[in-house]
Length: 145
Image 1 (cartoon, rainbow, N blue to C red):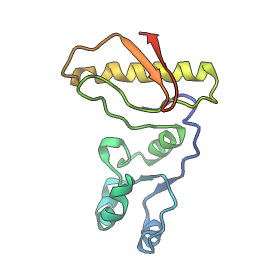
Image 2: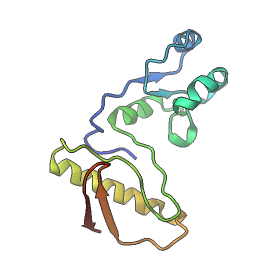
Image 3: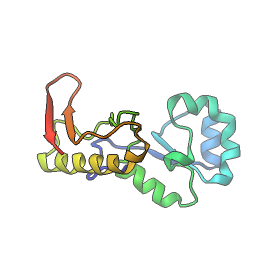
Image 4: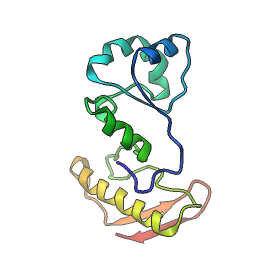
C-alpha cells in the first residue's frame, strides 16, 4: 500500500547490480529497500543470511522483485508500507505522525481502510464496521467507518 504524501521518512532505495554485490561482500548496507530484477536474484541468494533478518531481501510478494524497476523505486520512495491483515481483520500499521497535517492523516486513514476492504476476502471472521486509531503511548480514538 502506498500512503498519500509519503511516510515522513527519507527512504534510501538501492537497485541490485554488480556494484551493490561488491558492497555486500564488504558487509556494507546503506539502503532501506532493495529492488532487484528476477534474473539478478540468483546472485543475491548468496547474501540471504545478511539481508533476510533485516527485512531487506527482495521479494516478489512485496513488489521488490520486478521487471519494472523504475515503478518499484518510485513506490518505495513515495511511502510504500507493507502490512498484513490478521485473521480478525485488524491492520497493524503506522499511517502517520502527530506532526502531520490533519488532512494528510485523513487521507492516510482512508487509504488504509480501502486497502483493508480489498483484503477482506482473506479474513476468517465477519468484518466490523468501525475503526480505532491510536498511538503507542497515548489515547485511542474511535472513528466512524
